[in-house]
Image (cartoon, rainbow, N blue to C red; front, side, top):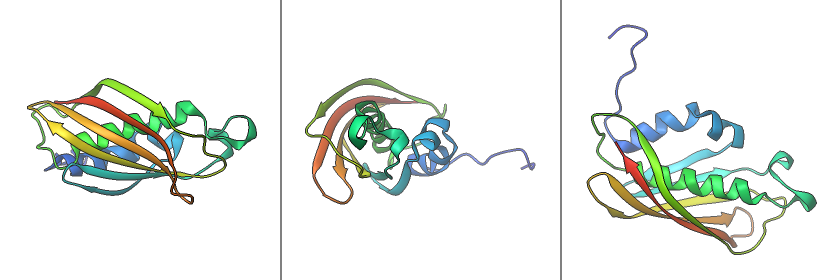
Length: 144
């Protein structure tokens, strides 16, 4: 292997561990991977004023972005690595439960069903300090 070659990941979890820190969108939001295991992923978004709207309320678009990233990470968690290392969100639904003010959130993703390439996942967004459910989402993600 030359200095410019990157070793292919041996699992979907390893792929996410490599991918997330390199993603410009994930970096911009400041999302951190906390834990990833077979079909589950836990990430964290620390609070920053730049991610809020009036009154230091975390913006709904930021929460939706967190759900999308949670779906992707849970879909890859423990999955076999396909020949082509790629993926895309096919569909996503978000339900906002209550606002969160000046507080980071935990992103908890669970893969509910896994077909050959389509994975259905659920994500809960929970206030890091309060433990309150802020939003939940479901989605289908295509791996490979």
